[in-house]
Length: 274
Image (cartoon, rainbow, N blue to C red):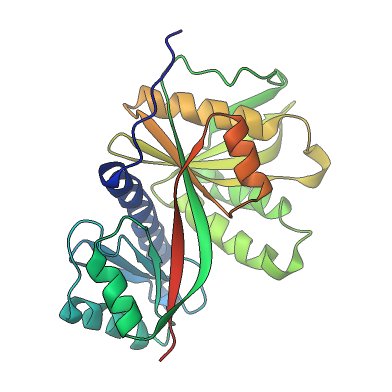
């Protein structure tokens, strides 16, 4: 098999990656609006920046792509800030370091501070991709049927049940994810659901998310099987690059790098203080 080449992590690649995650969150917000209309979930696009409201306190309530496709103006930033403030939400921007200089100028001028970092990782993919690690042949991977959204959400929740502070949030996020345009993959061990993973495709980029494994089934290769199957599936749909987002220095980053992912860049989340 021919060794695959990694595209250079320049602004062109960054735009593709950021656009993919922005579209994934737009689809999530639209699914939330249908599933839980009382939340008032909605989104807007301002100068190529996607601002999402998924309820106060939701991790999806923020912007993606600030200053990526074109410079951001004071008027544009005013519109974005009012979008969040009018809904009682904090103003948060997930910003790529390759964004236009205007984004950083305005963030500093308007009283923002950095509060969080995340690594965006990527790798080339093809239809003959193999992870070159043993895959548990008893673990079967499939895309869920339309009527299985509750099953997928319940399985994802079980993987987070031990973390009481986020378990309920994961349950609701999982249900919305399963009802969004993202593809929801289920891992089964001898017919029993044990793990979940999600896949969003935008153009030729595939975004991996939604990883969860129930405690009793860990260390049996479910996430490896899910990773390989989603990567190959994405390649059959015309994707040439896969991406995922992790906390810097986390176990998730370590595992991703073990399977061919590289860090493209580190994003900073900015919060409006004043």
